[in-house]
Structures are given as structure tokens and as C-alpha cells.
Image 1 (cartoon, rainbow, N blue to C red):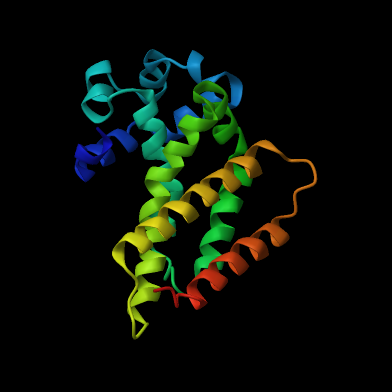
Image 2: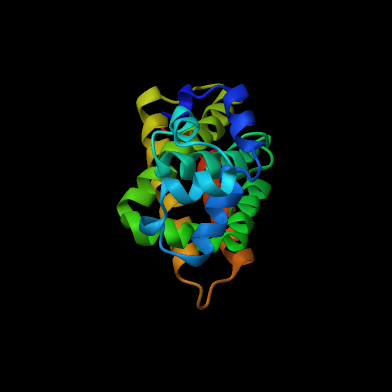
Length: 194
């Protein structure tokens, strides 16, 4: 499982001839995700099969690690209470620049699985925003309600980002960012729920 991989082990895998991320990205440009093999990845990386499986359970784990390294970990570095608009913009730019990755994975595992994939990463980010906003209040929210809000907004964000990746016609990034920002601002400023 990806959470059990040590930083040292990942550095060794990443600093091989060609990193696993670069290899996976290149393969995803040219073929469906379901057709990519561990053999192709290890040949391009210059590592053996045991090394790959030491680091990753499967190719899906490599995909999750790639998305975490390139996007999720960076978003977590934002001051999410203040800079959530910048965080949303970063995520949308990442999707635009890497839409072939998102679409390749989407086509292989489907919308529901991709949504679960994003959900597990975004729930912590959204929970942080809600918890930080709640700390500034005199009367704190019920933990059950905070969990409800986190789940609700995480589902909405994951769905919106998947739609953004799949439906290119008629999209307007600045309007979408404004809409998401407005929804979050409204939520954060109206926490007077008993």
C-alpha cells in the first residue's frame, strides 16, 4: 500500500534511469491504462520487477502516488483557509495540463472509482478548511455536522473536477473557480447552525 512506502524507497525508485512517474505518464499518452504493464514500466525505469513490487502493489498504486506527489501534496501546502482559491486554481491547471492522465484512468476504472480515488485525497483538504474556519468561531460546530459538510463538499468537488476533465466543450475556468470559491465562502461565513 502506498502509505507504507518509505521516502527513501520512493527516492530510489524515482531516481532510477527514468522515474516511474515519467514512464507512466508517457505510456498513458499512447495507450489505454488497462493495457499498460508492469513490464513496460520496469523496462523504461531500468529497475527489476521486485523493485517495482517493493514500492507499489500494482500500477494503480503508482498512479495514486503520481497524483499525490504532483498535485495533492502541493495543495496541502497552501494555507487552505486563506488560499483555497489558489488551491482550486492549481488543481484545475493540473487537470488541464494532465487531462490525458485523468481521462486515461477514468476510461479504465470508471467515474465512480475515480470519484472515490479523488474523494480519499480531498476529504482531508476539505476537512482542514472546515476545521480551521470553525476554530475562528465563538460557537463551534457539532462534529457530526462538520463531517457532513466535509463529505458534501468533497463529493461536490470531486464530481466537479471529473466533469471538468471529461467535458471540455463550453468550460470556463475562471467562472468555475468563482463558483467554487463563492460556495466555499458562503459556507464558511454562515456557520450559525445549531
